[in-house]
Image (tube, rainbow, N blue to C red; front, side, top):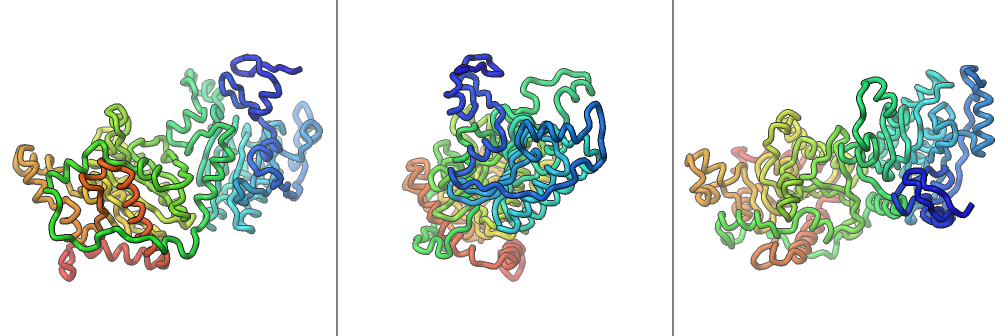
Amino acid sequence: MDWLACPRCRALVYRRRFTRLHDVCPDCGFHAPLTAQRRLDLLLDPGSARLEPVAATQVDPLGFHDVVPYVERLARARAQTGLTDAVLVATGTIGGHPLVVAAMDFRFMGGSLGTAAGQAVTAAAGLALERRLPLLLVTASGGARMQEGPLALMQMARTSNAMAALQEAGLLTVTLVTDPTYGGVAASFATLADVIVAEPGARMGFAGARVIEQTIRQRLPEGFQTAEFLLKHGLIDDVWPREELRAGLARLLAATRPGPPDWGAAEADPVLRRPPGGPAHTAWETVQLARDTGRPGTLDHVGSWLDGFVELHGDRAGADCPAVVGGLGVLDGMPVMVVGHQKGRTVAERVRRRFGMASPAGHRKAARLMRLAERLGVPVVTLVDTPGADPGIAAEEQGQAIAVAESIRLLGSLRVPVVAAVIGEGGSGGALALAAADRVLALEGATYSVISPEGCAAILWKTAGPAAAAAEALCLDAVSLLRLGVIDGIVPEPPGGAHTDPAAAAELLRRALVATLRELRTVPRDELVRRRRDRFGAFGAPATGR
């Protein structure tokens, strides 16, 4: 027939058009299931795919019988699909970047995880490890295969250990979640990847919705366990429509390849490394500059000087704090991980982003991304612009102080270069949680302080009135900070402040970051950590005068 009905909205779609759209309904956006082979055709560059052999496993390890002997079920599945089991392993390229792919096919006994599927995933991981290549997992499964009993259960540990070996070797792992992904697959290799993206509407969870409803005897919320639900709750990095998958994966792969040896050699350094004669503005005027709603924020800077930015979401523990943004991109040819505060422009956006005040989930998300950067050997750039950490009740209930402390500790031990730039407000521990870096820069109109001037005045003067005097006493402007050694350099701003010419301000910061990272990228990893700890260990020590 030339027409088909969409399984979700029942709209009639011309079959050839449906195929051209990779089986996506043009009316409602429903993403129909694809076979493993079609997945490879969709994702890999044309002509690059090569199926890789996988060693055979025992056909019926338990001699399992129900209403139909297991061997007959297997034979039927093989005849219907043309596959040996539920996973195809292939090598190829995406955007010219080589990788290994393990793609699951739900048609083969519901994509269930048995010894053969576990062997295929483990073999794909082993091939990626041997060839030093990224691994892409395309998941579609109902869970572990009952007919193989405890041996199927053991595949969860087997594949999880294979993922651990890849990550210990510093190789990127990515999961593409397709509908559905449940049970033993969701609770093992699928959710252990460095980056997890999902197709729209794809469902993933440990137990299926029907099982949950029958167990707790409650009706589940609309959209429960869908990709959009998972993104909202910080459990995956993003939702990518099928037509954008290859391009998105290509950007991600490009952002994890090492930069050239002579990276940044020609860039002039705009940073003021020694204090000028005096600040161009009073401390209180600088506070107003730092708070100006027109100042470029983290996403403005990222959009200006990063190529192929891939934003990553979520703390993997149940939340995604909108006050902290981060992801991988390419800075003048070198991959970097950028993490920063995002305040927003409009009142509505500022409220949604909590005015750049990170919750514990925001600090955990930042920590997750920085750990990923360390595993991949990618430098970290942090952009600080926050009045402080979220002071709310929920933040305290979720361990705000612990989250800030752990972020500071993590920064002190990262074995990759870390450069922080205070681009607006640098408020208290919420700022330091992203600023305990090898080098700390501040834009000319930025502030960095233990407390806001108003808060200081309210505590010490018993009224917020003397805020200007408090700002002066706190030495929170860039010139004062450089004299104290709290920052390592001042990044100039366009006349009148960064908000008067955001593009020029972003360009100055780009040049400053390149010049600073150029100096750090050749320092041995253990030496980076030692110097960073020495830097912060010197503050207040008698011998340094700090």
